[in-house]
Image (cartoon, rainbow, N blue to C red; front, side):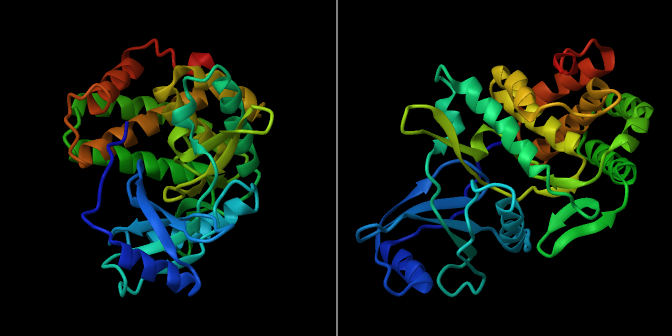
Length: 329
C-alpha cells in the first residue's frame, strides 16, 4: 500500500570504502547494491575476506531529525525480546562522509516474507509472525505514547487518554487533507460511541506499529522449513495497547495477503478482552483513517484503489455496514 520513496543520492565505491573503514579500518568494501522497499535508502555492502559478513548501510533523510537515534534505541528494546533484530553498529550524523546521516548494521539472513507468499507453507510463517508479536508485547512500557530518540514523547498514563487524543488528531488531519466531511463526522461519531472499550487496556507495551510481510525476513532451515529470520524497520515504534498493534498487523498483512489474518491471530494466542471483535473494529477504524491521511499527504492519487480510494470505500463500509473485517476474529 505504501509507495516507495527514494533519496536523491549516488554512492560510489570510494565513499563506501571510507564508510566501512570508519567502522573498522581493516574492512575492505567489495560490491554494494540497493535493497528495495521501505521509505529510506538502504544498501547491502559486501566485505572482502573470509568470514566477513555483509553490512547494511541505512541512509536517513534530514527529517525527522530524531529517526536514527530512535531506531537504535528501539532496536535495543526489541533485542531484549527476540534475537531476530539487527544491532546498530554505528550512527554517523557528522555528514562528513555523506551529506546525510547514516547507520551501519549487520545484514540479517533471509529475504522479505513478501518473497515467500507463493510458498505452500506460508501460513506457518504467518503463525510465527503472531508468535513473534506476542513475544514483543511481553515488554511493558511505563506509559502510552509515540517514541522518539530519547524515549516516549508526551507520555500518557492511560490508554483512554492516549487514544482519545490520537483519534482527535487523526480526524482533524482527515478534514485538513480534504477528506469527505460527512464521512469524517459519521466515523468520528461511531468511534466515540466505542471509546468505553479504550479503558480495557491491560497496560502499555512495546509496539512495532509497522509489522507486516515487508518488514519480516524468512529463510528455509536445514530441513526445509520456512522460518522467520529477521525483523526490521523500527521507525514507527510506540508504547500502546497490544490490540492497537495487533490490529495494525492484521490490517497491513491481510491487505497484502488475506490468508494471513487467521494464522497471525492463532499464532498470537488468546487475548483477554470483554469485546475483542469490537475492539479490533475500533482500532481498524483508526488505522484506516491514519493510512488514508499518510498516503494523501504523500500525494497518492485519491482514486487509487490500492491506496486512498480503496480506504475511502472501506471507511464508507464501516459507516453503512456490515463490515466483515472484525467478524473474522
